[in-house]
Image 1 (tube, one colour):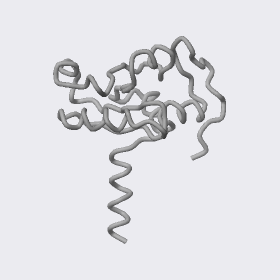
Image 2 (tube, rainbow, N blue to C red):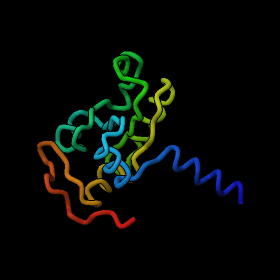
Image 3 (cartoon, rainbow, N blue to C red):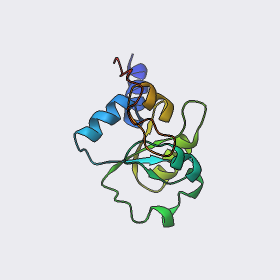
Length: 131
């Protein structure tokens, strides 16, 4: 039983779902959302307030102005993309506190949250998370 508890505690320590991210942002918690995809994808559609640092460009020079007192949440397209995992790894390697958004942008929208960009969904899909 202890091994199971450790496994799930680790998942919760390193992952966040769209509902939890939305609530944390709404409460004004010290979170910075990072879109780890290429700039063209970010320009087309992204989570409101997110910054774009493609995982391939995450290095000390690109992140030197970021405050290590914040929690950074990385995301990408969704479960078929691992840019968020690579981004979270890169940020953690540089000493940042980081979590990965489960389901990425795809599940953010499925849970009914709006997006910004040239192909955004300003009103979300109105499904809302049931958890």
